[in-house]
Length: 382
Image (cartoon, rainbow, N blue to C red; front, side, top):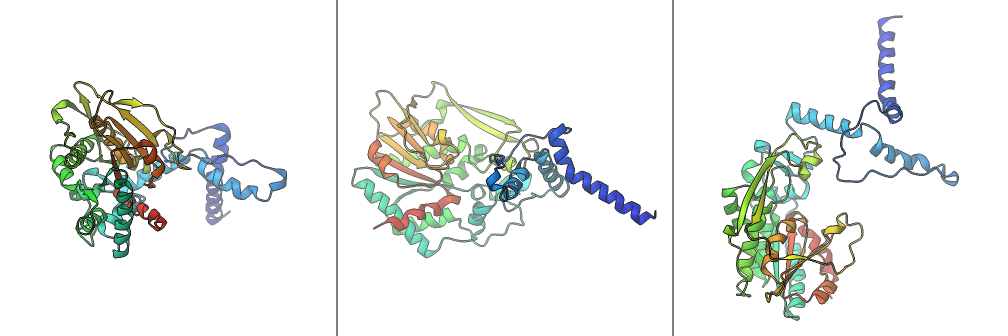
């Protein structure tokens, strides 16, 4: 037998062993898999039904692809190879690595920062029309309306963006929309950029390994929002920073970007927490039981209520997303009741909830990358 045949047999054996190992490992568990870091549930195993045998292979393939043993280990090793050898993200369209190991989200966040798919004049006009519709609906009920955009991380920390990321414009989607609304509408827009740029001088206001801002940003942003509301409600006051003890913890904290890279141990981060010396005045209130948006993965966060017993302060309703998780503990300290509705990143008008809650103030807080979601409802106007 010549060397070529021997080499081919070895390659055939190795290939056969590789493709059959997952099946063997399913039975004998020779190698344990690592923890699942994907932000999705594995697919359920399809049932083999006598009347649907022909369709079974098509159903079984995606199940096996998402459930075979050592899948997570292979994904983690693949990511380790890219990060360790090339110092590059294996999926730069989803997550890319900035300077000093700061992680940034791709997709719409990066589009906003670099100026891809900018807001068109037609879209700006639709934003104005939709937001003014909501404002007028609320004004008829004596309710004040405020619009807040949670800025993308890159616009607050451009110094950590790699030089390979080239910008087409100096304005993000949020800055473009805020400027347009300030010039062309009566919408009360609360711009947080300057507040966050100032706040970061004393400590991080976004997580290094996550695309969200942190509680430091939440406290600074809350005070800026309260300062704006105070113009219409003089009884609303800002929250003194001296009321809190700042606690900073550093470690391998799991952020959503490290989870996307299956690298919860590689990147360190800082967690800022604020512990009020006298405790929080607002306490949790029972949920009303509003209908949760179909498919919403965080049902426990859809509807949250806090209140201060005996308070005569105004009542607040927030239509928002996960960024307001870092506002809610602080802002609820300045209202007799605060309701937070996290409606599946849809930012709906929620007129039924408004009718039922009867707030004095409604704040719409939208993550910048999701701004266009507001336009889903612009065509509903008559």
